[in-house]
Length: 221
Ligand code: IMP
Image (cartoon, rainbow, N blue to C red; front, side):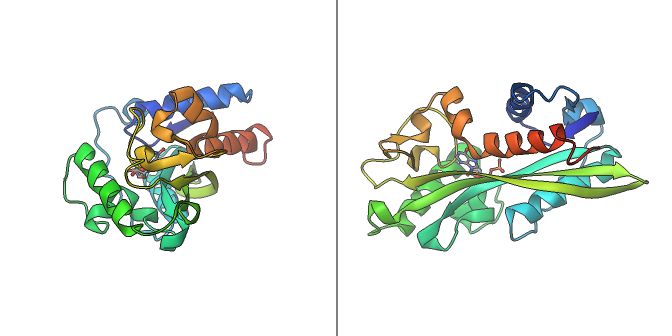
């Protein structure tokens, strides 16, 4: 069975592929957008949902309809409890209140981090509970229509560090330099090796769960 991973990030495909192999799911061949679409550019659908689930489903369905193939899409971000779950679905554009303004990624990441630390001013460490969330959705192409057949959620709990202690670390992206990982909250996720991060990450958990469902035949494509 072939599944198109609707992302322009080749690293995500490698990670999902490695996890599927690790759990013994060998019957699924993952294809990149390039392999599935060739030179045809598929317009990215607008992420208009108010939840990670809604956005992952919108993307999976749009790509499955455009390609007429089974597609997997994901949506991820950071939830901070004391901020009522913000930045949530606007995580990548938090510094502009969710607006896409064409800012280069590195600058966007830096300004998102600054905004988050500002929002959490005066909040003590023990009240800075947060989690990374990743939702993966699969849309199947069946009966000449694209239908979402499942979504799964993976999470990675942690805490946002205090200014002065964070940002730090050399690896990762986004909010990693601010995100302290359990059990002792002394290391930021930007200080973990790729393997260490993959073992506890929200993306890893979602991919593992998805693979287990496919492997158990709970969902078949
Ligand atoms: P996307 O789903 O890849 O577009 O990610 C959405 C946004 O959530 C990113 O731009 C980051 O700001 C944040 N994010 C998602 N996953 C991670 C992670 O593993 N580390 C740090 N930030 C993340």
